[in-house]
Length: 189
Length: 189
DNA sequence: GTCTATACGCAGATAGAC
DNA sequence: GTCTATCTGCGTATAGAC
Image (tube, rainbow over all chains, first blue to last red; front, side, top):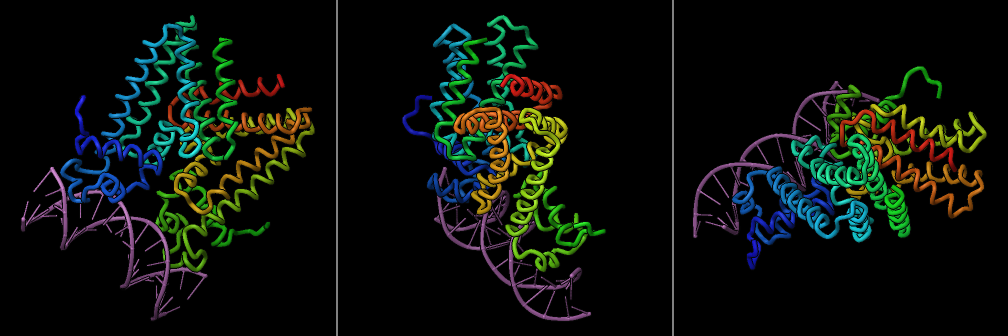
């Protein structure tokens, strides 16, 4: 960490992450990744034995990033409501990307589940990071464990649905309007 | 219509529809479809020139089916609320399939958008059939056109999110609980 | 109409030179 | 470590026999 330049391996991961998100895992070939990184296809296998290995590294990397973000939100605010607001605010700030490519977490998960990829459970684990974090926030709002879990699943399904519809249709106002509703929902809890 | 036996063409369409839904468009090969239909791969091209042609036919077929369903709901009830209930009830009855394979409409749409498939707009048209029908129901509940459209998009995004989360996680109660909430939401309109 | 045989291209993966 | 050359398998698509 703190290195001036990314290692090749790190560069592959960040490029692959971007391409997996924008084009999907299946549509992203070794040629695509190696061309974007600026290395030959053959060189690839020095760093990763197989395509799934890159996927595993990408997911691992994302899990680390998500974990860090959740910690930051915890530090930035001690009110459960404000923390939940941070999540919604993040989704708002991603609105252009979501509109173009879908939810960064959800779209990859959906694809991997359908592909029956061996790492699909690693992918869904990303969502579970958010869910478990949300459960804590709702618990701190004095809901019991069962209810907190239900509320977390509800909030996640809301944002997933909003992302999907925003991705499928060109309605600029839609995402922001729905996120505003979610903020009111959080306030009223 | 009313034929005792499906034509080969019709059988290909219904088999392809099923496989596209359960395994996704990309993962479904000509071999898969022809094996399921019981014909040779070569024979395939007598009925459809290319894979995209089957997709187009599948979507066209679905659009016809959806149109019929919406008409049925219109005939079965004259109350806008009851009609909207029909939609939610349908989603409830599909809960096992949704859990296993995702929303029959949404999952294919999401995939085709990501694939940048030329027929992705035909696919999203399926969702628009539902949306426009919902807009009529909300209008009949005396909402203005803009608000009706927003409510329709809201309802669709809710069901899409519920489908996605139900598909991603093995929570049997989740879908039914959320659909119940949607019914309350419709009642309170 | 339905079949078999085959062409073609692409993506994943390997071997070996440098 | 990075490259070029090459292999293999699969999926789409075509040709032509029956």
